[in-house]
Image (cartoon, rainbow, N blue to C red; front, side):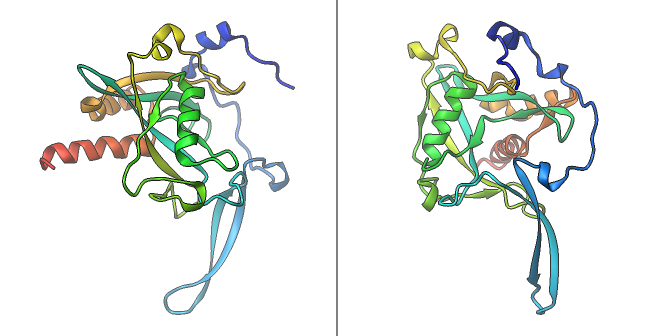
Amino acid sequence: MALPTPANVKASAKAENSKILSTEPLKGEEARWTKLMKVTYTDPLGEKRTWESAERTTRHKDSLIDGVGVIAILQNPEGPEMLLQKQFRPPVGKVCIEIPAGLLDAGESGEECAVRELREETGYVGKAVKVEGGPSGAKQAKGIMFNDPGFTNTNLVLVHVNIDPTLPENQPENLKPELEENEFITTFAVPLKDLWSECRKLEAEGCAIDARVGTLAEGIEIAKKWAL
């Protein structure tokens, strides 16, 4: 059993120091979080076909979604900033630039999960913003997004969370993330207007850009170009 990592050691650990030691096929009985599936279906012409896909084993039976992504905005007087994270991801062998995210607990709504994950991963206390047509309870979730539908049924909802940086609990000295033993996350903020250029800079430094972050950055640039 792994022992808890001392807080002072964990704080000094950098995602860049992680490295891949080996890769090998995973036996089904060894998998804890995922499973491979063979889907049999008929195409538009009625021909029977099969498809290989992957599924999470963690989705609760009463939930339509696996988890949430958190669009966390620091409401600074000089302009809104978006919270991003650096985290080493073994499947790509790189430090990834991501938004806070996590899996739903049983009976949890998307908004509840987002606020909890934000606090646990970053230490910030925020308030979920109700967006028309946005997520609600796990049984009636709206705005469901599928991460890679040609490969997996894994999905999520994006939840907007506003953070008031003037609150005592959101002062730098009071931020106390509650990371899992195997989580090494560095949180930083980027002006929302500079998200695209910051992504390009981080990519040039060798980081991998999570699709959610990249898509948001692309959307902002499209809105600027076309004055939407």
